Amino acid sequence: QMMLILISKNLLKMSELKQYKMFIDGEWVDSESKKTFKSLNPENNEPWVEVPQASEKDIDIAVNAAQKAFDGSWPNLFPRERAKYLKAIANELRENAELLGKIETIDTGKLFKETKTQANYIAEYYDYYAGLADKVEGTVLPIDKANMQVITTRVPIGVVAAIIPWNSQMLLTAVKLAPALAMGNTIVIKSSELAPATLFEFGKLIEKTGIPKGVVNIVSGFGEPCGRALTSHKLVERVAFTGGPETARHIIRNSADNLSQVSLELGGKSPVAVFEDADQENALNGITAGIFGASGQSCIAGSRLYIQNSIYDNFLEKIVSRANKIKLGPPMDAKTQMGPLNSLKQLEIIEKNIKLTLEQGGKLRCGGKRHTFSNKGYYFPPTIIECDNHNLPTAENELFGPVLSVMKFNDEKEVINKMNDNQYGLSSGVYTKDINRGLRVSNAIRAGITFVNTYRLISPSAPFGGMKDSGYGKEAGIESIKDYTRIKTTWFNTSDKPMDDPFTMG
Ligand code: NAD
Image (cartoon, helix red, strand yellow):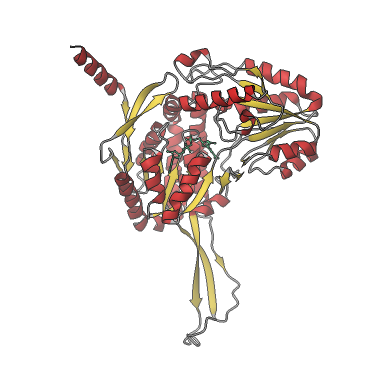
């Protein structure tokens, strides 16, 4: 009898789970093996959705569907025709921002006020690339041969594999999907196993636009075998990856199998400098947005803070007092400023790094221990640690959490060296009223983005991406659309006479 109760309880639990299918070739399908996995709600650590677990076979079906669509009419539509679908996606996003935001919040723990606003704003990216679709031009070359007219055109690449992390997934999908479609490519998108639900809701919106079957496919699964099978598939010509550096190394190895073109948007340990002349209220806001916004789970998190000696004690006091006032709570609550972290694994990595840092002399100024909500979700409070040097673990490693490591500096030269002394180079920040100094520091920092007197902003027209171990390739902005094309050169012989000597290359 006990057994029966257990089974029925489990059945009840299963039936409460929201179910999704994969979107392949315009159909909603289970995985071939019928295998599934569950995603947890980080607020209470309980499974809430169940999604298919794609096998190599499923990936093969999805990639072949994308190839079939590429061989069909999609790349041959007039650019403005393709742009109409992008605009339709933008409109669907605006109309459904609330729903998408809610799903993303439950699945990732990110604040609803941010996920909803983002879903709405991400529509701009589709409009932006819709506008660009018919503005990518070819050239006529000033060629050094008689009777030859030579032109270049930009042609689509083929099937794109987009690998998405769990955070900011609507944005990180848009900067791949929109330029890929605008230029006539087709795509298979793999969601993160840590938060697969939002992309399937997004898939429903894509379906509503009536886009031809197979042009957009969305699959769910783990790195192995799903991610590997997708990024090494022979028919994939382009891999657009966002995630961590370790996974990126796998991606590069996988692409040795299909020789695909790869772009990598990876992590960061972004430095921020506050000079003695900075507007301190503004710097406080920017620093707070940079490391405590999204509970620090942002690839551009400003997690290494350098404060000029003369203002160090006083300014640090202000940041600590600001951090202590941050309101933790349920991510759907409009008053909450920091929700839970996305996963227990992340929380444990953060705890380990903090422990090591304190053992090596770091001084804890606030936070540092799981929040009392933690028995239910993965809550971690704003944490500030003073470090004598930036080689202490919290100051050196990307933590993807609300942990700020603080160091001192004396002058501009010293802080530039310190800011550059890290393997990553994604973002950076400078607070100063001296615009010349702002420019000098920005020029000297080896990072893809520098924010001067501000932080944590995005725009469809602003290229985004890193240097050094933060990866290569830029997303967003005009140039990035070209990364979804190849240059094709066509030679026209304008002479009516036969070719000269066929045995010499002229
Ligand atoms: P992750 O690297 O663990 O996973 C990213 C994706 O890669 C997931 O979909 C995962 O399933 C897939 N994957 C794993 N192994 C694979 C394999 N062998 N082959 C192919 N795919 C595989 O990253 P995450 O934890 O989801 O996200 C956090 C990381 O992403 C952080 O390092 C963060 O800095 C980075 N990030 C970077 C940016 C940026 O634009 N630079 C933006 C957001 C996040």
